[in-house]
Amino acid sequence: MHHQNLDRFLRLQGADLPAPIAVILAEDDVELAGTIKHHIDMGFGTVLVVGDVAEAPTEGAHLFPGS
Image (cartoon, rainbow, N blue to C red; front, side, top):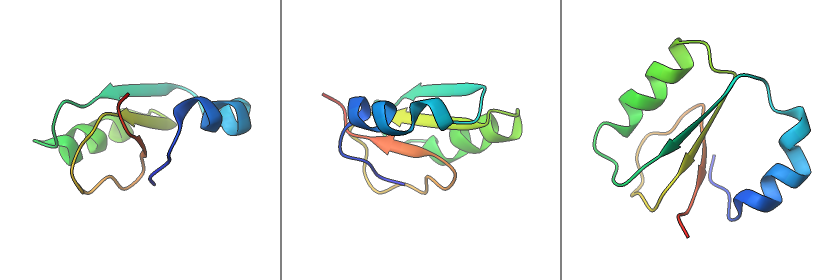
């Protein structure tokens, strides 16, 4: 799910995010889908991806543009 602003997202929904929370800093979208899947499979309740990446499959993650 794509979002415009990480700060706003956390202020509005931060308290309701399932724990534990993983934060992935993505430089590019190479193996991004696999990295997200791995974190979900490891039991992270929320996966936040921060970075300017192309349209990669990010099912189950919250995607934010880099600053």
